[in-house]
Each structure stands twice: as C-alpha cells, then as structure tokens.
Image 1 (spheres, one colour):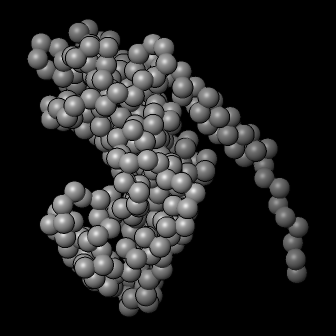
Image 2 (image 1 turned 60 degrees about the horizontal axis):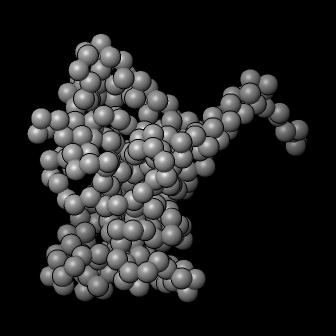
Amino acid sequence: MATAPTRPSRRSRIWFALIGLTLLLLVCVAPVTIGAAMGRGPVSITIAPPDPDSAMVHHHWVSAMLSGDEPAALELLAEPDPARRQQRVRSYLSRTDALIRLTAAGGLLGPYLERFELLGSVTGEHERQRTGLSEVYFARGSLCYATRMEAIEGTWRVIEWASAGNACARFLEKSLPGAPPGREAGAEIAAVHTTWANAMFSGDVAAAAPLVAEAGAEERQHRAQFYAELTAAVVGGGAERFGPRQGYEILKPFPQNARHQVGYARAVYERGQLCFRADLHYREGQWLVNRWSLVIPEACVA
C-alpha cells in the first residue's frame, strides 16, 4: 500500500534554511575576508620564492586549525598578549570548525575528506611577509584558506587566518606552466583519468608514467611505480575487510577549477568498496596526475 510522502518538520525546514543562508553569507563574505588577509585593496597574486621555514609554519598552522590543536596554534600565532592570543586562536578554531561542518552539512561539496594541500605562498607588503594558500578538500570541491605570516626576529609567525574565496584557483592558474585549457581539452580529461585508473588497478607502470606531473622521465617512472605498488597493496588488503573483489569502476571526473580536475575510481568488493582519488592539473597543454590517493568510501558516491 502506497503511503503519502511525509513533509519535513518545521524545525527541519528552518534548520536547512539556516544552513543554506549561512553558506550563502560565507560565499558572499569571502572576497572581503581575503582582502583583509592579504592586504587592503585588490588581491594581487605574486608567487613568493620557496622558503622551507615559512612552509613548515604554514603546514603546522593549517594542521592545527583542522585538528583543533589549540596548544600548537598558540605557539605559532604572533600575538604578544597571552589572553588575547588564546582568544584569537579559539576564535579561529571555532570559525574553521563551523565552516567545515556547515559545508559538509549543506551537501553541495559532499563529505569532508579530512585532508588538505598547501599550494604555496604569495608575497606580502614587504619581504618579511607572505601569505600561504591552502585547500581543504571535500568530495566534490574545496575551501580555500589564507595564512598570513610575518618573520619576527628571524622566526616566521602567523598573524592572520581567513577564508580566501577564489584565491586558490587564481594561484593555481598562475603557478602552473602553459596556457589554460581550451574547450577541446575537456574531452581529454576523461581519457586521461580512465587510462590512469586502468594502469593503477592493473599495475601497468609503463602506461601510467607519462601521465605523472613530474619534470623528468626518471621521476615520473618512480612516482608511477610507487602509486602502482601502493594501489596493489591497498586493493589486496581490501579483500580481508570486504570479502572477494568484484572488479573496479571508473567515475566521470569533475572540475575543481579551470586547471584542476578530480576523478574517482572505486575497487568494488562483496561487502563494500575502496575509493581512490586522482587530482589532475593542466600543464603545458595536457592533463597530468598531480596526486593519487585513497579517500573515504563516501567520496565515490557523493
């Protein structure tokens, strides 16, 4: 007997409306926030030269923000007053956690993958300042964050942390070599992703190596070998958890931005699945694999 659809409760409707409104406000506020984080006026993307010390501080700070590690963040924030420093760190942690939770609950970007990537840094107002850009990944998108840093008495310290709107996409556009992809390049991405995933699941290093985003042939070969061996070990171990393997499926890639596409592939078992993610960048006229990693199974059904 068919039943009439149940209308969501008034409380549920209000809750989802609040989520949508909050996300909309966050998107609208992002350009203002990044302006505050990277200096007043229009945002200028000038890539800073590599600096291992600032990169380390950048990494530790983002890790602390995403893991809720207040003591680690307190050590990195450049605020002389202890009470003020603790207040600011707790505010940053609270806002970061709230944005991640609301983004995941909104469903537009899918579940939170609990991973991030440091893209690099842009120059500040003077040589002792720089702003690190990082992406926090969800199944079908990301949040961009800016970590503004300054060298104080020879030591890099964080002076501000904020959401950064589309600055990560702009940074990637400027940092990757070659012109941006044209319309014809869109058809290539599915073929590259399919070739790569087939090579990973079959252990065909020769087919995978030319698709690796590394400078030299030897480096590409080593990275492809590493990914193939890792995939074989993970897929083989999956049978112990989920039963006999049934095969694998390659899912259609989607755009993260103009220069960054994401493709998923899953190994299917009798009682579950493993999900692999390929991050592909457009470099010198072709799509190449920048990273291949195991992610949460929910990412392949988001």
